[in-house]
Length: 547
Image (cartoon, rainbow, N blue to C red):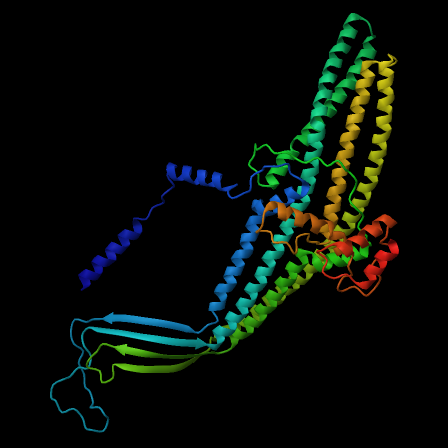
């Protein structure tokens, strides 16, 4: 027997030492690369039409890989919650075993039923066969384990909510990035070709200027001064082209479109700025503190920590368990081969009692950390709201100034073209004004992008969710885009509803109404928007008064 055990031990040791690192083969690496390349855009709808802003948003929300990672994280948390439900059930264990020995077990026995006298045989007897099969089905339940499992299940439920808030945070950032990239791509599609044509004109004008200087038709200083202006114009054109050239690639990456894929973008004809947010700064802060995912995430973590405090208290208590179940044994020498067994057991881990003060201090320290973090997040959110509001205000002012400048420059260009046709100005002057007009057009579009981005950032700072009642994963992209557009256009009406923690007041305050058209737009949207479930009578009254 010792030799057999030694041989088995040697085999096990040698087998364990034989495990070595095995790198992937070239074929396996190539297969993984091909699978990853095919899976990046698998299952996506084809690009068979020009993309609008809301088409880009819907594609980004549904197909962006960062968002899909957060969505899978939330799904994983839900599966973990389902698994935690089973840990609260009693244990039901089925055991089956076989034993054998080299000789018979012997000993003294007494007659059954008890009281009929002892066994009188002179030789030892046995009541156990050499080989025995046994089986039992045991139902066990531990009160302490049930309590701890219940607490862990509640913590798992809160982790699902945290994962959803993280997903919402990713989508808010994604929508904001899509708005910026889309409008920059629109600007690029509209102006890149004009910038390149103007660059060719600048190159020709540079050659003409150098020829004038070489032929002596212009003084060297005049020629160099004009050449400097043309080079400066050329440098500005190249800078704008480089700045706008990457916008389409950024938009494609956000929509999870394979690099190098050609797609068309709808260029809107109406370039009016987005509507005003009919809310005061305090109202915006109140909504942000109610809806921002960062604050809700900290609140859920605090709730998880409070559950951990209850778990620490439960772990100090004695553990009480009960078992019951049928048993069967193949030993024919037994008087009863089938029987029902039950029992109870109490245990107490005293080390848990002694370690509780340290555990309590840890939980209190974590709770204090979360409390301070909540205050820090609150201050950051309040700052973001005020910054986004100021940013939107300044962006609107810059847009009005840029539009005014564009109108003035367009009038100047018309005068210069008329003067050029009449031979009153030179080609170089016309090129300079063409460049100034085109730069003004580009800067106007860039400022418009800033306005759109600031508008989206203001709603993101308030934590507004334009797709709260939209099924992201089902339906076609066209239906999703249409629902997203309706939801986004209704954000103004949703934001104008009274916060839950704010004291009662008028639906639209005097400070919130910037002009009568904006007030009418917000009030009318509140009445007509299908995503607003309830509209107060005060809102309806205000809408009628504004009309």
